[in-house]
Image (tube, rainbow over all chains, first blue to last red; front, side):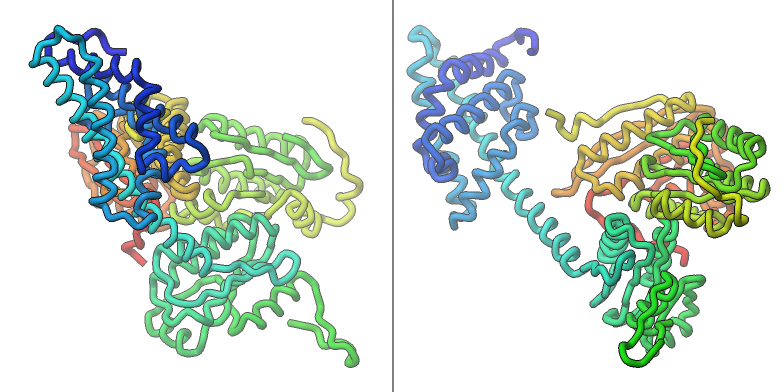
Amino acid sequence: MPEEAEGTAAVPTREIRDFLRRRREQIAQRWSDEPVFRTVFTLSRDEAVEAGKAVVDALAQVADAARVEDPDAAGFTAVREQLARMGAARSRAGLSTAQVSSELAALRPPVENLLVSDLPEDATAEHVRACVTTLSVLMGTLRVVVMQTALSEGQALIDRQRLQLLEVATPVIKLWDGIVAVPLIGTLDSARSQVVMETLLESVVEQQARYAILDITGVPTVDSLVAQHLMKTVAAARLMGAECIVSGIRPAIAQTMVHLGLDLGTVVTRASLADALGYVLHQLGVGIVTPGTNGAVAR
Amino acid sequence: MLRLGEVLLVTLQGDLHDSTAQQLQEDLAETIVRSGATGVVIDVSGVEIVDSFLGRILAEIAGQTGLLAARTVLVGMRPAVAITLVELGLTLPGVHTALSTEVAMELLRQQAPSSRFGGLRQERL
Amino acid sequence: MHTAAGSQARLPIRSDMDLVWVRQHVRQAAAQLGFGLVDQTKLVTAASELARNTLVYGGGGTMETEPLVEGTTHGLRLTFSDDGPGIPDLEQALSDGFTSGDGLGMGLGGARRLVHEFGIESAPGSGTTVRVTSWVGRPPRPREES
């Protein structure tokens, strides 16, 4: 709690703080009928009232810190998530940004009316004006916080979806006990390569897979960057105790790689996924026998 | 440090001081000589980061035990640690690795001179 | 409740033990900002390399952590400073190739590959400052050399 501030400038914020704490219940009750609370907290009226109280508490804390103009004030931290939910829910309901903003603006009058009726009768006009102004500023800041959080929530959602899409595009398949494979389809950029590497290595741990096959049949081009990513994945797998085989290097790609002087070094490569599986089964000492004919063993 | 038959099992945990790692390197060399162990399994599954200092110590341990006619297998490195080491440029080429202690023991058993791997005795050092 | 601003700090780098604190602090700050496990590990490892440089070659110094926001992306900046002898040939110190094993080169070059942004200021006699930054959810920089 800050020390009692000196000078008149800080007095209205203290007055507002005390007012918010004193009228917490009434303010929350009035807000719970406003669309921005009523339509988001639909479980019961009590739920909306509780949500309202949390916001009043946050505002009181911000006023207490005398930071009514600061959307980054620490007081907002506790309710940021709730505010984001409110903003997001209203946008989802089809409201434009301007409409959401005006719904939030509607939260101010009920509080302002309460404040004016609460101020002592002998208060000077100047003091009344200062208090009302402080409250307006504080409510304006609340609006900014909601809009800000809603916007960044939107961006975060896009980022999350982009990442999920990458993960969906990178399925890890268990081919056999101790063998996993990732068939790669499409272009491998840095972001995708990172997801591929992490997904593959995680599944190596999960499945306790001693062999992992990276099949690049569906990768249109292999440049030096992609080759580098493949080598890194193989090296990381080896550090964990797994062998990683690269399969599906089509003749055209093999040619480009030679042209570019790309060398996969000591990496084990096979022409097709089937060849790679054969190689690994052989390493594991598993033979495949065609019924009827005795003895065709996979190599 | 735990002894399982001919194998020394070392489990590393958490965030290691530089000096702890160096101490381990010295102790291991001594113990191998004293016990005649033929294999060392270092379990790093509880290690959250391996920087170039610790990486180099692990590589040196492997080289050093090789000179003492023993083999070192690094076990259970976490994916995040492996990715970071590769990015650092430390791929530990001379070090054997395995996914689990069981696989490591199997690996050592296959390579070990025959009969010396009879029943697993377990004793504290 | 912690805000991003809570992870701003300045830590001394005077001993072996301080390296452990540096790693733990960076891990915590990175986790709080929402870095994924792999990116946390990279950043902590970079910090460990740079802190050891500060200790061994700079004779000790400090690390400052500073959370950043750019649009909706969070980042973490680490600044390592010492008043040591400085580095006479920066280019050489950074060009460690890939396998050259030891000394200063490995620490600097290795750390540079683990972060998104890397800056260094140093001159003989005036100490060394290394500043690195990583961003949440951003893919790693492709390596310049192949």
